[in-house]
Amino acid sequence: MSNYLDYKMKTRQPKDIETPYAGVTNKAYQIEKKRLQLELLNIQQKIIQEKQRVIIIFEGRDAAGKGSTIKRFTENLMPKHFSTIELGVPTTAESKNWFKRYERQFPNPGHMTFFDRSWYTRALIEPTMGYCSKRQYQNFMSGVLDWEHQLITEGIILVKFYLSIDKQTQLYRLENRINDPLRYWKFSDTDLKARKEWEVFTQFKEQMFKHTSSRISPWVVINGNIKREARLTSMLYLVRKLSGQRFKPLTGENIRERHSIEVNGVKFQGLTLRQFSILQELKEHKELFEDIEN
Image 1 (tube, rainbow, N blue to C red):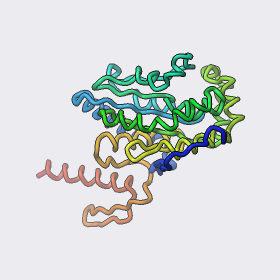
Image 2 (cartoon, rainbow, N blue to C red):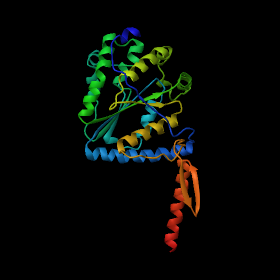
Image 3 (tube, rainbow, N blue to C red):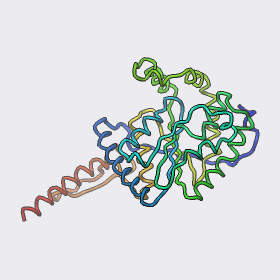
């Protein structure tokens, strides 16, 4: 590991996102997912109209939930205006021209592209498994931020998600894959080999966070141990970033915010956002009925 990293790079910090959806129930999850998907559809329409180019990448260990999270992002989007990319093993030529391999998959104006693993394979799984040389790794690490900054300067909107899971969660999910007759094909020998190199992968992950996160191209780290929470949290982040608005979650409890409202002369204080939203809706319905009666 140390042989790969004997060079200087500037230290930066990723964004660790605290979820407002801790303990979300399945019913609440379905409600909030629909709300966020509606916002994403509205955002997609804006992307089409303004001919924007949007790239969202998902990184993480095997079984972190990258593919299933992307599916929730895209299941109600207009299919003609987005693509999901999951590249396989690179050819010799692609391995030598690493960034070009991904540039060929970049979105046209008015499109979104979701990467299930990305060019950061060279920062994570490739060096962990010995699939790239020390020189290839170092060239990537020293050049990737400048490349991303150039893309952003040219107008591309780039979001980098990392779904973080612990060792026990990964084991549980891998065992489920093996025993599931409909999903066994998702399990491979590489999954086992990568798991054996857990600590090595962790070191490369920490180096990636340290040296490839910047103010305009930050890593957004999402706790992926509970899939429902991870999906909503990452969707919420993207909605807020692309809409430019402070979209407020209706489900889950945001412990940092407390709200108050007066209904029928009674003032309710110290409410969670969910409690406030319910009372606000009741109040609006009551006022509507009063207007109709009058």
